[in-house]
Image (cartoon, rainbow, N blue to C red):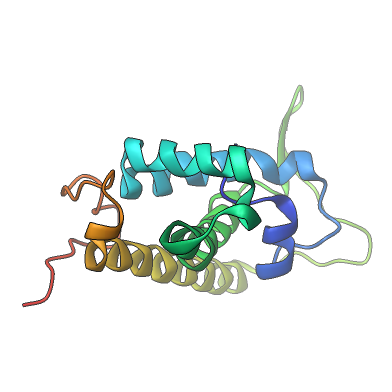
Length: 163
């Protein structure tokens, strides 16, 4: 179970609708495991995934729906794009690691790729930071969320509250 689906990624990120689901789905899991669960904490993460499993995202209401739809999903969409960025055109085969290029397409230069990667990472970190801030500002709405330094530090810095 995940907070997002392939159609979410295709609709709200630069990932093309022509991509085969089997190439992007592993990065949904990766982004959830590496980025989202450490922010939410395992208890809140499990509680929310259980709600999705029971009600689907559209059946969830109130603060849980706001958290999922407005904060977790945007972060996870961009984090998934970021996690998959270096792997979507490369495959490990018997002959070694190969890079593919589709018909009628041109690979980016190193500089173009670096700019593209930076923009995707910037978007991913913006939405992740926004998720952390929302959770910390609304901690009373999520009793299973426990603020600790380990679920709020992950390449975005430490949230110190309102000083």
